[in-house]
Length: 175
Picture 1: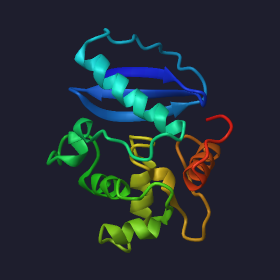
Picture 2 (picture 1 turned 30 degrees about the horizontal axis):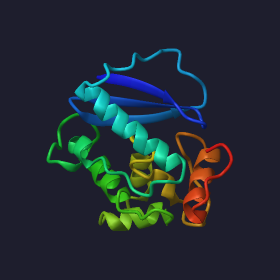
Picture 3 (picture 1 turned 45 degrees about the vertical axis):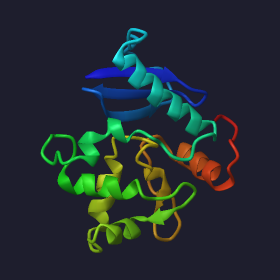
C-alpha cells in the first residue's frame, strides 16, 4: 500500500493506493506525524497520484463537479465482492452515493430507499460513516431527514463548507 499525503489550503489529505486502485482518502487539519515520500516523477504511481491530487484540488477550488476516477476504483465498481475492502452492503451504499448529483442533498432514509432496504437506515448511516473515499464518494451530501447535518469524518465545519460551495458554486474562505 502506498500512502501519500499532500497539503491544501484546508489541511492535509492522505491517499492510499494499492495496485493502481484508490482505497482511501482521509483529511486532517494537522500535518501527519508520518511523512510520506513522494513517488518517483514519471512513474506510473506518480502519474496516478498526481491525477487524483489534481482532481481533489480542482474540486476544493470549485473547478470540478465530478470526479473521473473510475479506473482507480475497480475494487468498488468491479465484481470484487470479497476483497476485504468493505462489505457487500457497504459497497452497495457507497455506489449509491456516487449517484447523488453535485449540489444535491438527500437523507439517510433516501439512500436506504435507493438500495431497496427502506428499513436499514441505521445500517446505511454506519456504511456512510465508514466511507473510505472522502469527496469521491460524496457522503457529505447525505443529511438527516429533518435537515440536520449528521456526522462527518472530516468535521461538520468542512461538511458545511462543501455543501455551501456546491450549492452556491462559490469557493468559500479557507478553500
